[in-house]
Length: 250
Ligand code: MG
Image (cartoon, rainbow, N blue to C red; front, side, top):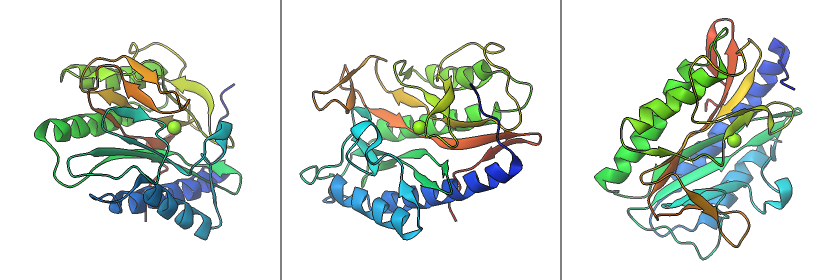
């Protein structure tokens, strides 16, 4: 069931989104050669808790940290570790969120660590731009497939591939709500988009082939071919005036 939010609820979601976005921005500033993924996680957790909010990934289905930090060929759900030291040239996907006043924010960004290759930068640029194409399609009267196909069309035209097994989702009083928001699909198909829908749109894009697998830790998802992967996400509200990004930092 898709829950439509009132304007009062959207205001609360904006606050959860603001804290989530600030935490992500802070975490991204900490990305540099020599830093461990655990240190980045600690920075994000400290900030979220200092706002009186709760890191909503922590303990979710047993996930042990505030942020998912996925490096290079890791797609999503990487577990922060004290022995995972970042080096120049890495691309670092950080996905995190905060809950406050009963509502959730969820956002992700892939940060460059030091100087990265042209190829890596192009993947980051395309993945981020595909998210904005998808957000533009999040308008009342449209269909879910308009959002999904916007991502797919943009990245496949540039030779990249869309991960199929993991998708975006509704977000609100629960971190994951209906509907599922795939990053592939057909324009004009799927659920009709209505004001009050709140969606976490999150392209996960591989430089190589689309196939991925989960590591023995039960969480970390990697590309099968070892190619780089990028991940950008915003929580977005569909309003009568068009899409509104809820995960906006100060
Ligand atoms: Mg999400």
